[in-house]
Length: 516
Image (cartoon, rainbow, N blue to C red):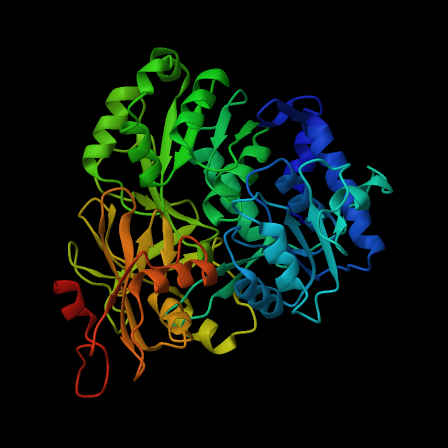
């Protein structure tokens, strides 16, 4: 048996009363998290969920996330974490594509009505039979007519459950990642994939029993999920949750909760470094307690690294990975020479190469595609054998990312997949946005690119050609996009043009759009 929920259960046996999760004034022990997860597992079993079934989860960084996450795993089912910013149409797509039989979703807020969007999307998918609304107050009645609540489910269930036996190669989590083909596809990660990655992270971070991690990375994303939640629970750490990143709240948590480890994407470090009221916090205390900063998701500018390290007197270590690699594939270890801009070397048990279009190794210092093989690589894309076969050409996973390797074996990311946009650490693929824009009644053609942005690294810009006889208003198109796409995807800048530059074969020349 090898079940990802073992990471929680082992810490419960060793540290039942230790604080596992802090959220505001709420403090929950490992025993409390485990008991709640057991209640959820019992509830799923009572609802007919069986080993191998898919169960979706939309929840921000709240104590409910690990409860439901591990509850699904304990039941022998597969977790399908969904981005909390998805809209009705996107939710329905993910539920249908993953064959989800049940769906848990947080009720949300007036500004982000997650529950309403989720309920609407759920009702469009015939095969998804169960829906539980996660309410802030578990005893509260459902604010959505017809929707059962998580509190109602748990109220009648025992806090004791015998975890379903799963094999190491059974699928534990399906993480959705966009691709150049447009629609998101699900990367199947096994129990072994994620457990091994969590163990490697423990060694890379030189984890200590008293570590306290500030969790601002979204737990539905592979970075926060493996590197902080799973690796943190493996180490018996205390995890301090923030529902969303905010520099004020982050500084307060760093100060009040004696945080030792902070993981973030570059925009988070940028925000902490540039927060104007930072001096009102006890920065000396924060620097004394904090021992490590970890960055991923995009390259961290050298000036930001210098600024953060000077302010907090801690090393900032960078790594590289993808949803398909559980996610960590390479890392700059603490005992290694620091090289600015480097993503370090492959982690234990992993092989990485830089190759040309024929999978031949390129000379040292030259650019090529990163390919990977090892215990961290996914099983494949769910229900997509052809795309999986392309990704695993010659037995190696082809990342589509361009890098170079120096004479000491250090890797450096040169570029991402040609058209991909990285906005605030999120990977955004233009084709999905273009297809959505072209569903608008006044848009006949669309092209999307990334443009430089001081805070987010890149912002999303769309060029649209109107349908004959129409005159679309750019501001109205932005508003429409906001209603139909997740917040990290929709274009903030839209330019209307009569034509778009194209090749003789009809391919849009995005290189020309980027130059204008």
